Length: 295
Length: 275
Image (cartoon, rainbow over all chains, first blue to last red; front, side, top):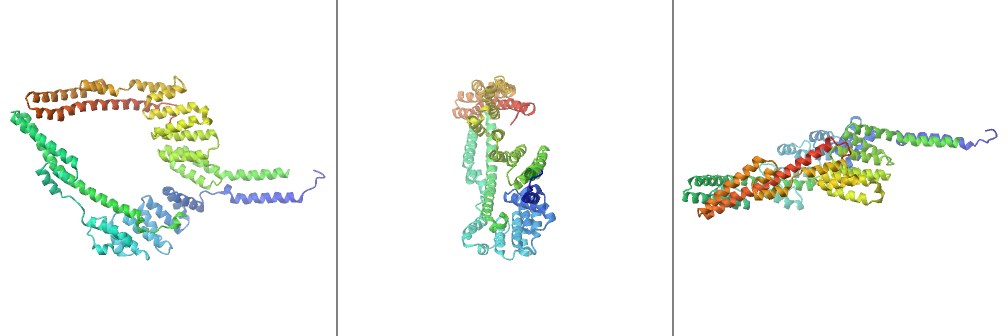
């Protein structure tokens, strides 16, 4: 080493490298604390964007134990609602009702969840009490209020008052729903029973079950004829056997027609409610999109 | 000398940088090996999120695929195995992921897709040395599709006395012929049920057909033609057709039992690789 000239820069570079190494160690992945609150929040937001709500809930929950963040709480509540944990979602939205910039959205979501829970009497009570009503989005709640009448058995309000809160583009469809709710195309079980008693199978045809109606007519007719023919040929046992079968088919056809109207009416109600729900889903329950949810 | 020192320091920094990722990967692996699949997936996802260099992309996606597969979330399993395939670094890894996708397809009984993927693998020149494995999974695909003949052929290509080939041949030998059961039922009502050992059902079928046949013929001989035709079409024909359908149903059911017994053996006792 003797005689070797020391380069003043090499020592400098060595120190610089050590220093940068130390810096790197502080900033790069060698120092990642996967479970720090900030990293949990970042990871939770990523999971939320991926719509992996179940895992996002866990991350937000851990994060919110340590920090208070309105956006995180809103997303937490939103994820809970998406996973069907509505009661917890409502509690968390309530936490944003006062002194939070997100209170308007939280209140709307609160009403939306209450609507989705299907207890429309309670929902309308909440609307009337006005305790949690959002200040600037009262119209949205009124629209949901009107729709609640379409989904339960309470008396409908007057049609003009019913549609007045909706936009021009929505009115036609809403009025259509209103009329279908007010005058549902139900079939009468009594009419079906009487028709089937006079002409076997007619009750079924009345409810649109043409195949069943024709079958009932043919079977009852053939069995009655067989009974008659066997009695005529002095085959009493067979005559009574076919009489029994004919009576059984005849009564079955009357009972079946009544049951058929009930099934038909349930189908009408089911399809109507489904259409209303699909409409609401397409309209996103009249709620605006929240841009911050995708960040 | 100092130059080397600098290299060592820089290198150690890089190695350190991998430490936390490695630790997280090991942690997720530990959860996976303890069958905590949901938690394992969360940790693999967490690792993926923070692994900016995608160092662990292949492993995490592959293992998430395994977790989803173990949890019977087969569609998700295919998604993650396909993602892993994109990050495969060697032919071996690529083959592994491809066969995993095929195995999931076998499990979810999308046999057509599994066979198509196997054909693609076979025609890929990178995997010519893997022909036995390809045939092995082809055999499994056929077994799950209840096509024991083609399954035996596929296993036979690996080894003419392959254990699974013999199993498939056994199933083929034990199975009942549905066509034969139906034909003999056409000739003598109840015979199909007798062929499969369902003697009581066979006797009932025969009895009903004899009784209804007698009533029909008796009415016609009595000149009550309409009566006879109605009885014949509503009762006799119903029992005659019912007897044939019954024979077919029994044959299908028995064949299912035979196939299921073999599948149960494969699931519980077979020691080789399974889908």
